[in-house]
Image 1: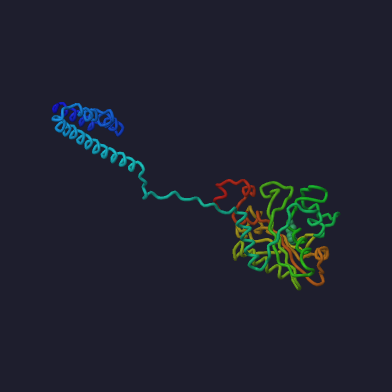
Image 2: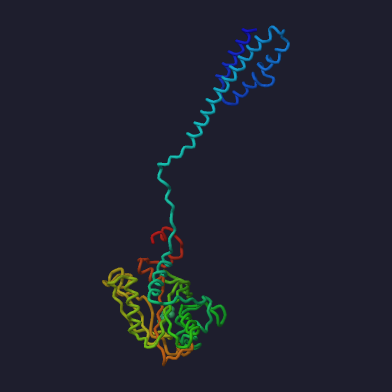
Length: 340
Ligand code: PHE
């Protein structure tokens, strides 16, 4: 009996040490120590022995049970430690690796130019006004001294919605709206940025583009104030050494009117393709507010005077950044956009 038990223990220990994994180990545990296991059966069988034999045999079987339990626990601990080590190895994070850079978005070039323009005029005390893009013929033309039969209405190709409603062709209607909204003859200093619409499409014209309007009204405003303001603005925008010139022109809502040129920022006045070899670039339209515009919008031209100007944001962005096709602004090609 003793030898049999010895053999059982040796066989079991050999199996325990040869177990390939925790599951096999568990199976071995059940085979020997489970409810119906071999060692358990032996313990149960002790009852059939004579009282004299029982203590010695009981002690013997118990030694085997303790030995097997010890062997099982120790191998189980080793296996669990190995499993944990493998898992840690696998999940290791190399904290010395450099992080992936987070790509920051940025503003569209037209937004950048718009903000630069706004910042300049706001710093000079101008308010920022807005008006609707779907505009009445009345505000877009009539209040600006362009009566129904005025030939200058042909100057712009308009998108009409009905006979008397259109997509505004310029930001100038915001002049009329601001004048009408203000108390009679009250001073005004405002800019009006926004989208405008014209029937035109090529490398330098888009059917939708952006303008910034400006209007200043007060007592004793002169053409010198207009010149000084725009010269300061254009030098800020295009650089201190930019030359600015005023050419007489015509707009129905200003008198006198002027177009403003800056020295070409590509060739610095030498003459190149961008400036058609003139050395100058046309940059905006302006003039002294026509007395009729003041009258039509509830102001008294004998009491106050003013100046107005309007500029194209796309054109300024193209010249400032050296962009030769305006359509690039609207195509959302990241290779283009990420340059600014
Ligand atoms: N509204 C004119 C245009 O769109 C520009 C302008 C504005 C001219 C104000 C003079 C005064 O071309």
